[in-house]
Image (spheres, rainbow, N blue to C red):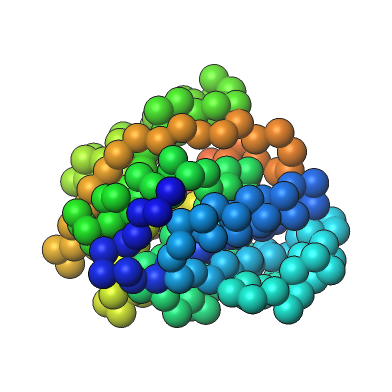
Length: 234
């Protein structure tokens, strides 16, 4: 694979991690390998979101001093706060985040890079939500319909991997620290006139670690975050 972002721009890849001791080392290594094969300028930013297991220690032991790798550990604040911190630390032209349980593969990265010049934000959507229980699928469907109805968006998936032209974060301030953060960026980007392009990708099924979206607490928080944002920004 030798597909480059238009004008050979560079990429910041953010990996938020919470209690990922079983998967973090392999995930980082896979991402490094895929990015090196793509022959683009990149940096990987790992954000430990206050893990209670050995995640932080593994990262420090295995990746301290590695070129093109930034590590930051912070108190637990939620998925959105980890991605937000990664964006603050990023320095490349494009920004992308990937979950620990879904590291990049060549097909996924190739697709993002091919589409990079088509819009300000490239939005991928999952063809199948692998490993989701029926309850999680219902929650996801309700959330998707709520975002679409309240904010006039018509994308197929608000909570998966996105590629951002970094210029949008000069205009967008991220407020939410949890799952709603991803939708918040899209909503604010739409209001500012930024463009979207979406395409389908395969989702890897999680085999270890904590699935935040599976908890009732996370579902309720996301619902209330959505409603609060709607009335605040109406």
